[in-house]
Amino acid sequence: MSYGANVLIDLEQMFQYQFMQHAFEAGTLVAIVAGIVGYFVVLRRSSFAAHALSHIGFAGAAGAVLLGISPVLGLFAFTSVGGIGMTVLGPRASNRDVQIGTVLAFMLGLGVLFISLYTGYATEAYSILFGEILGISSIDVLVTAVAALVILCAVAFVYRPLLFASLDEDVAEAKGLHMHVLGIVFMLLVALATSIAVQVVGVLLIFSLMVTPAAIAQRLAKRPWRAVILSVVISLIATWFGLTVAFYEPYPVSFFITTFVFIVYLLVRFFHPKIKPAKFLASLQSIEESGLDG
Amino acid sequence: MKSSHSIAVTATDQSAIITAEDVVAGYPGKIVWRGATFDLSRGELVAVIGPNGAGKTTLFRLLLGLQQPISGTIKIFSETPKRGNPSIGYVPQRHVIDNETNVECLELVHLAYCGHQWGFHLSAKAGRKAALVALEAVGAAELAPKPLNALSGGELQRIFLAEALVSEPEILLLDEPLSNLDIRRTQELVQLIDRVVRSRNVTALLVAHDINPILPYLDKVVYIANGKVATGVPREVLTSERLSALYDTHVEVIRDSRGNVAIIGIEDHHGDE
Image 1 (cartoon, chains in turn orange, cyan):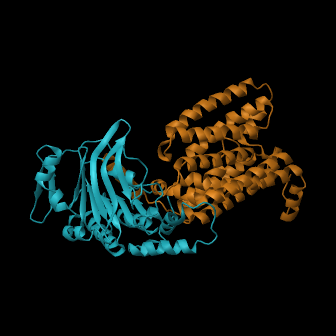
Image 2 (cartoon, rainbow over the protein chains, first blue to last red):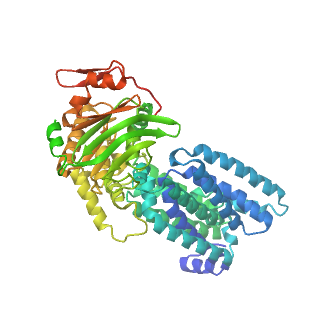
């Protein structure tokens, strides 16, 4: 393919292909969902959990391929069980690293086993790892739409309690919110969002839609609602940009998406400095000091 | 101190709103303290003091309904404490806001007002107004649009106090609000807390490591150490005789010319809290 002078004609040419239509439909849904869920991931400092969930999803997807069922089903089954497992093993959000790492290592081991048992083509594993948005069927789009709708409704319902619990766990708990329940709801949201986002960017690159846009948005907007919208806008632009460029260039979509968000992140990080190093050190010190108290 | 008249008006409007009767607190297999019996009335400023690890935060957990007493009864407005009691405003200990948390102060206080409600509200007007009123009450209206990660320790404590006040509570539980503040900020915050307690007629329990900055404002003190609890008017509780008798060991309470108090003979023991 090559670019023409007229952008409209270029776009028209692109959308003549059904696989591109599907890619845009699924990509748009995934970008919206990942942008929203990602804000909570960033706010709760749970990017390691999101990272782990996507890798756990890898085992699920590989298992599903082995059984001959849809990888999305395997992804969701494994990520949701893994997410609940992490929450149950480590009840306080702040110190879950070890529990997450434990579950993650075991699940990756399972994934390797499933891949080695699978006698088909290695491309299946490749598409799970790096995404295969250009191979999305209309059924995939439908599944993605349903999952996205479920996530949107759930977020609308838990928005304020989840935000409160993410910002100020102790006070939220004293106000009667159950951290365990909210933790599980959050993990299920991440699990479902991950399951559908894997189609677009793959297990390994899920951060590009789930964490980076939200991290950028959090630096730019100090009202959560605005940050959520901004995060969605950034991941939408990244996805559309990636798909469009990848249509004309012979390189993977996920590469363009990850590169786009990374460049935006760098620009915001260095030209919009919100974080003051001196202050950061001071806060570390005060944590250490108070840690000495009983 | 207003010991005499607080006894005199007990029967009228200043009846006890928190009562503890022979409370034993702790965890299964581990008693933190026992024998707590006290009444706290409306509008009282109460210090909860004692060595590290003595179980000061445990008292708050009992009042918040996050933990149950092993035996004895503790009541708030004649009811057993339950989680999510709207008449309690709470500022937890070691409250650290992550340096990356670029969320404005008004939003945090607003969430303390409506963050326990499920579903969506298209208009946040009432909540934002309540949040602003709470911020004004702690003299922090100008901090409303500032992000949390840009505040100093003293400013953060005022925001947390506003967060506790936004639901118009009748009881304030403040866990170590004075730690990590310098002398001037400590004074300012203590005066602010005193003003809030008097003007809103709320009962405030304040956990402190050092009683001296708050001593002039106190109505009562809850002293927790070595598994026992002494409660009453500071002048009566913080005496060598009283504490020596309670702990069955020689405890000395020393006062300097300015009225500052030092308690000698009870050592810190870590890890029980």
